[in-house]
Amino acid sequence: MKQNTENIEEPKYTQVFDWACKTIMNMSHKSIINFINGLFKRNYPEDSKISFHSTEFVRSGARKLFADFLLSIEEEKYHMEFQLQKDETIALRVFEYCFEEAKKTRDEMGNEILLHFAETKVIYLNADKNIPEEYIIRFKMPSGEEFCYKVPVIQLLSKDIPEIVEEKLVLLLPLYQLKMRNITKMTPENRKKHIQEFKNMLDNMENALKKSLASGLISGGDYIKLLNVTGTLYKYLYVNTKNMEEVDNMVEEKFTTYMEDIEKKIIKKATEQGLKQGMAQGIEQGMAQGMAQGMAQGMAQGMAQGMAQGMKITYLITKNPGMSDEEISSQTGNDIETIHKIRKNLMELA
Image 1 (cartoon, rainbow, N blue to C red):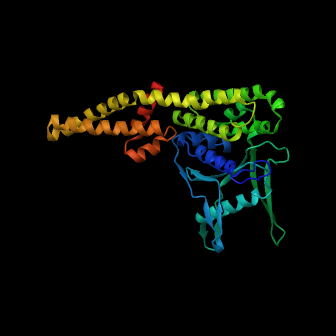
Image 2: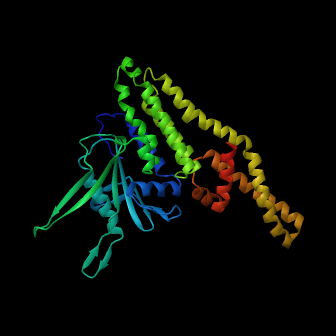
Image 3: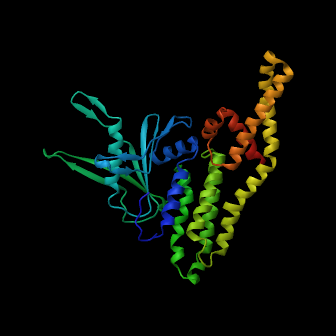
């Protein structure tokens, strides 16, 4: 993420927004595919193949370029850049990123080279009437022929929350609180007049996340992860601002204490749930092993292994609530269906 530091000076803000954007783009495959469908007007099934690409490009002279996010779904590439402030050079940077990536997968056909460019989008985290709907780079050849490279833009804060949900851009909701950023520059007296507006916005954000979870737009793990991003961003942006105690308490209740309560409930029954799941796996595994090496020994070993696996999955889910099923599968070796069942059971316990 690149930014103009005119309005947000401190380095910690750059770091926290980088963290927030990376967290948002590290959700489950299901949520990412729905997000890409909304952002780029596509209709990929939720089980489509998705791959993330390196965003570091080394140019001649060892100069490095760093894009924000680059991924592919079913072999089609998508590139996204997050911006805090207007940047007149963003189109050139986007072109450089996409050009470097296109060179990696070029098709060479005799004396012709075909470059496959990623579809791109710049996501501005503000609302500025001077920001265009798209940037255009014009190429004029010596022959006089011209062609254009277009970089579309969306401004998150120019949308309302129902529109964000309808367009499947729910992963961006934690960033929507930037809409109230100017409240920190107000006098304490004037700030009080906008407290209810702030609280209404947070209520709408929470309800939108719940609605998205209920509709299947995001997963349970991603829902918790988005709550965490919302609460963390709020602390960096607003927590030391005077006369914001009402909002501080609201955020603590909705986005911080809520998560702690979930964790306590889950942990309280995690052992029981893990043992139950482990015994089910263990009996099944033990039965198979028992045929060869004796029922008693096979069941004992199978139950021990199954319980250990069930507990390991439970531990990863409770300690890393935003971890995707795919990530847990790669760490434990269990199939996605088993992990999904354990996650669902734990969410019901919460």
